[in-house]
Image (cartoon, rainbow, N blue to C red; front, side, top):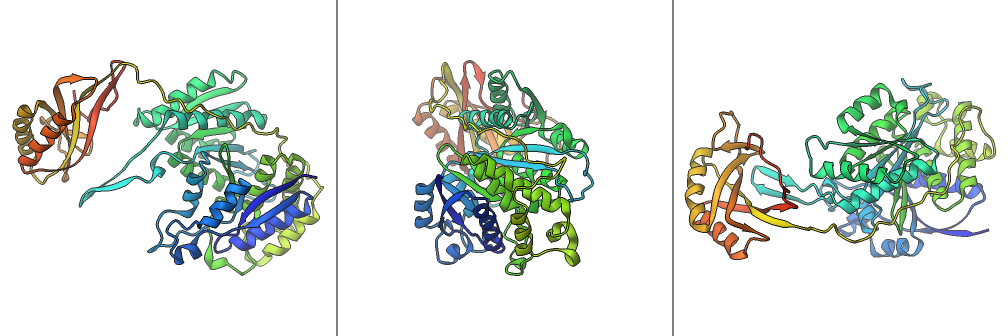
Length: 480
């Protein structure tokens, strides 16, 4: 029998208890795992490890390439980035797969509706790139980065999940009606990739309508592909439909490393009390076994969980309430005792091995390109009209023409008759007198010098590029 090497990260709060429960059940299933314990999270932050992930843990994951982990706390007031996000990004686990299904014995307002879906969330890009700046004392920015390659990877994986699990319909949820370049990138890529999966029905849906439909008629969905922030929100919503985060497993999948973890947090107030529900981590272990090719053992464990919940005699407090609830250890014992059993009408889905797509590194060809000008972001407490007149005079000698100024995305100069409540952060759009394949650095330098000479503070410059004759930048609200 094959022995699988797995890095085991107990985590913080209730993490060690629920991870130990999952390990007990996996070991009882007969699968041979060589567990390599490693650590991350709150204790490491306190030791001065800024990321919360020490080098020896990184080395362990690099060796085993498979991780089962408990929830990690990101302490408030010390430490830096989330250790959870750090692990996902360090090992390029580009997809977060979160299955949701109705559980027997777990009563919700949706019981009997047959909810059984998967949210496939892009996992390393979007706002979670974590690139933020205070541009003025009163205005912050966060860069939303979406790549063509990232979109193709998550779109292809979503279709492969559908095929592996025998599903027929795949939705792509975006806010492409508002963010046409970023969210629109996923929509366009999804539609292009869909042509290679003619056996599946592909549909785009606006993300707010998707949230509405998930509450109204969740049984219509099978696979939902979406961007990072949208996926974070939607997957928590879907878990609430079937009983909450205590029943929400997840898989972070990459081409080289996979990390399996519960969606819930560390719940420190319940730590050490033998009351935590280990179902989410245990079902994350089921996803891990599927990834390792142990499909039969994965199905046996999932069926044992379903039997235990259906019987209702030894179940966690999420199901039974405080008075009748079984402790973490007793619930785990019951699941182990039920290995090999099934419950009619609620069995593990038959699945095939999942194919994780490999997408080529080649960047899209730029083709014909031109730079029409620049947006210069400035800080000022002047009025829009005063600022516009000042910059219009400064732009000419520098070889530019001021086209417009916007404040928080709305054109305020030349005035459009709107009543915009302006802050001290202005986007000033300058068109080059001689646009071409690129702008000479000295031309941009002259413009910025002119802005400074006018007594203004600039903080950011963005080129106004055109690809294949089409603007690669958005207009302000009200801009002609």
